[in-house]
Length: 328
Ligand SMILES: [Zn+2]
Image 1 (cartoon, rainbow, N blue to C red):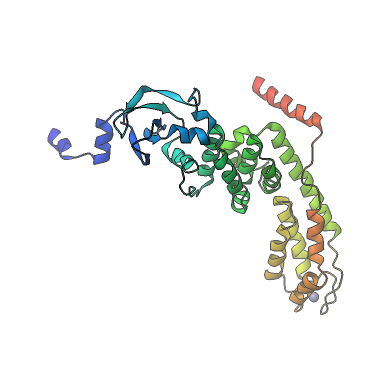
Image 2: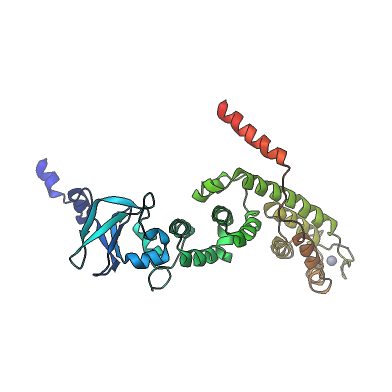
């Protein structure tokens, strides 16, 4: 039996883990200059050997290396690449985040950020160490169309937390597309811990109010200016479908732009034969290009307010209900 066990060799990396417990710190391949004078040991045990003066230029916190931002490591100093003893401090970030942060301090290209998780952690680090160069770039990255579309609520939470006023308004508008009241998975993102109850309430309230106003506007503007040239109906075959798709789209996201997709869908999807008109495509195009009807409807919806402030009494009712649920 023992010979059978002995015959199985652990993979090299597993064996190393078992032997070297706890793991010895590794050294960053990029940040290890021989004449550097400070070691920052990351949470995953990687030593970044850096120039303290350069770090202090980028972040005032590196002047005095005081806790709680920095941990005094078990060993206060180690032998540096140049042979002399250099000081060691521990930082909370892992080596990936710290490498990216240092890219804003050293004269090297800015990091490639591929996920919002990465971006979020890096913003936290840039804010924590107050690295201005990083903060400005990351703020712009966060306010890009990609992240406003893919992670609006996370962007909003971060912008509110760190006071990025230019981003807050945009992110708030995009957050109205999030299924705030019905999809609990929107609460899974770590940034939402920092979003206040008041902000949440304002988002939910604004979404509800804007949706109602948008649907009312759509219905009020539903009438087409001209009848179809072929079937003579005011509101030809595509029109009822458009109104149905548009209303559903506005309930999911109360913004004018969703009407473009609803329109394309209503023209593309075939209706019942009895409703079909051979000229429905022409009728639809007339409404779009000649009468600018769709533009008018979209403009009316876009002109609606984005932020609706709930009566303050609601705020206290929500807190009261939350407290009751905790007590009972
Ligand atoms: Zn027609």
